Length: 66
Figure (cartoon, rainbow, N blue to C red):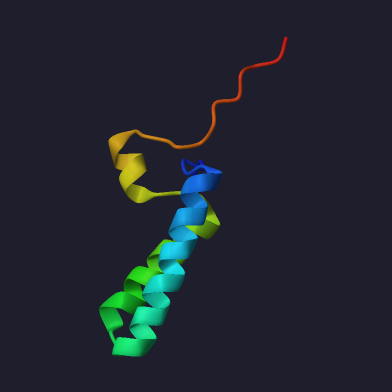
């Protein structure tokens, strides 16, 4: 599993995970909890299944050193 999420994208997903976790607790919503856990996983693993399927990446490009 190659990382395809950059640092900024990971921070956004982590923030969204926290928001959905609070929403899940406040509303007693299992759906919000599932979304929170999924976004936490994406942020911590640095890998997004949709990016993989679409062939996208938000990781910075590292040019090869000579």
